[in-house]
Amino acid sequence: MGAIFCPWRLGSLDIPNRLVRSATEEGLSTGDGAPTQRLVDLTADLARGGVGLVVAGSAFISREGRGATNVTGIDHDALIEPLGRMCDAVHGAGGLLAAQLLHSGSTLRPVMVAEKDGPYGPSAESVDPVCGAPVRALTKAQISGVVGDYARAAARAREAGFDAVQIHAAHGYLIDQFLSPARNRREDAYGGSLQHRARLLYEVYEAVRCAVGAGFPVFIKMSAHDGWPGGVQPDEAAQVAAELDRLGIDAIEVSAGTPEGTRRNGWDHIMPAPIPEGRFFAYALTVKDRVSCPVISVEGWRDPLRIAAALERIDAVSLCRPFIREPHLAARWRDGDLTPAKCISCNKCLDLIVDRGLGCIFHKGARGQALTDA
Image 1: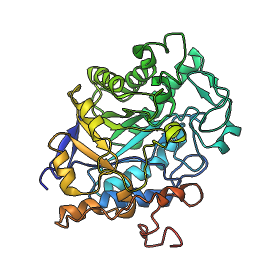
Image 2 (image 1 turned 90 degrees about the vertical axis):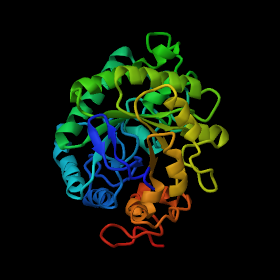
Image 3 (image 1 turned 90 degrees about the horizontal axis):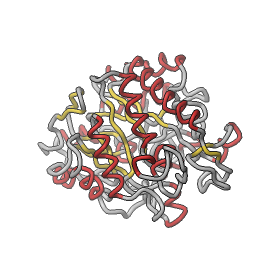
């Protein structure tokens, strides 16, 4: 298991092992976006459990970019102090914590539509396939505002004490919508060719980098395949990754799938069992062939022996659902118990998010209380 527990670097950040907790929505923040104590405890417990880097559940960069209730925000300065408490708890537990920055675009829960001016996307849509509401096209001035919101959010993350920031450009959210030739039908500088469709992403990265400085780690989560013919495809995703590498991105987490892909052909980024382990590994390798920065593979990793084999070709792997059931999974593997993760990919953890917050029906929380009735 030496490969799994070999240190690596994400930009200037020394990470003690090759296991990353991939971000997921937790549903454990206040209506204003502040993390609750339960979320602080959950995140700190992951750090105690030995994972090399924890990526916190996505934080909305603006109120317009919020996609659900009870999710974390980073859209105003009053959140710096409560987010700082979460950072302090993770650091006190010996861990590293990254903030994931998100504008959801029109990929949001239907209940959220009422609070929006839009919802907005790259192009107008009569009905969004996810939220079911009409979509308004962002103006150039609004796009500039989104870029600025990302930069200000990144600056807040650094001030709060996060060790890195991750730009969420996957899974059908706003940046991924701009990359998609089917969702982005603009005829200006933000639409048409791949270089134009990727312009928002490049501007966001450069604004974030300017906000946090050259030495602060900035990485990205991107979809290599949207899961349906009209969306992002692997070759174009690899071209975008290569340009991000040239611009100085510190690492790329490669995922795939969108809610729209689910509605069209059942192809999403979060699948129930049975699924092949490392289902998106080939996409990560396609990106790895085009970049010099570290590449992280996500989706379905469960067996430490398979993970160790994958790490001969990739820099790190990220998991989420296994850590929901076993927050101390990394420590278990480190200490010699190499049985695969107990997670069975039933996805019942995700069903809890809206009403009760993220949890596993088989696991007790950090303070010992059952997270569900089961």
